[in-house]
Length: 375
Image 1: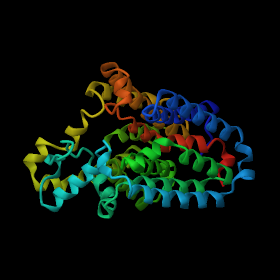
Image 2 (image 1 turned 90 degrees about the vertical axis):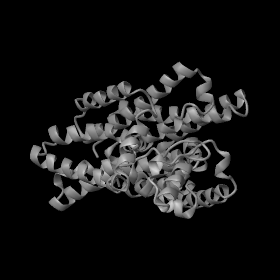
Image 3 (image 1 turned 45 degrees about the vertical axis):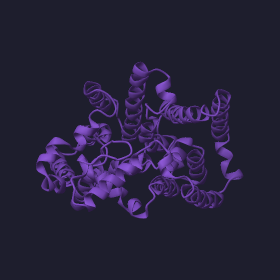
Image 4 (image 1 turned 30 degrees about the horizontal axis):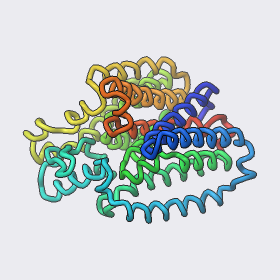
């Protein structure tokens, strides 16, 4: 990729740190207020030292050390996951996956089956549950985030030189947000990583052969059938590809139709299973009220069109996608704070885990500070 400008890199670092600060303070505060402050200051100091010593990372830590740390990390996660019952945590993403696939196994329409514990309905789109199915079979959704981290480390190892790979690894391993993801059995990071890597792969779409071109559309349709928030990044990229990359309108239209067809295909089994119930309850209805009022959502969709005009190269697409996702979740948080006060952040009313949708985009911006970071 072309290099990011300094302001984009600094903003990405700021957003990444801000998200983790929200996690560190929220959960350390439950011990005590001083613990919250100390954890935040310690984290910021660690990240400051990490970037200050970036050029000497290779001297201190080799990629082999990171491989050992990664192995120990995976082992520690496995041991901890089997010792922290998922039922004790007030996060129901693992439960939604279980309700969904248990319902399918019984021949029931899954989107109208509520959780016996939380009373919530499965909200994500169909392919989300397909991605989660292997972890459902294993009986442990915590492995989803561990898998996402391993995928990202592999990507960083292949794409960047040693010190940048180590930098990314240390940012991941010091991120409380990801430990929360693992032990809360959440799935945001895995979904976000897969979709972000897909967006990155579209950088060379103009040079793709015909089969690869339409295969990318099919894969995109499947991946979009996870969370509708990804439409923001798709809008920015789609306008960039059409007007900056100068992909022919007819060709782009065919790509879009293939994308939509594969997206719709993920819903067909549920429409056929029970057409009337699909009309009554489906992921669009459930997700429409999760974050904020619909008119607020429309504003951020409009903002995606505005951000396109700021994109001069593909790296701008990555940056503004990450920025827009961050702004969307930040607005959701402010909206909830306005209605529920600071206690809604300290308790569980505000789900700050949605910020993790930004992580893969921010990490790509931080890592790719200049062309020399590429191997």
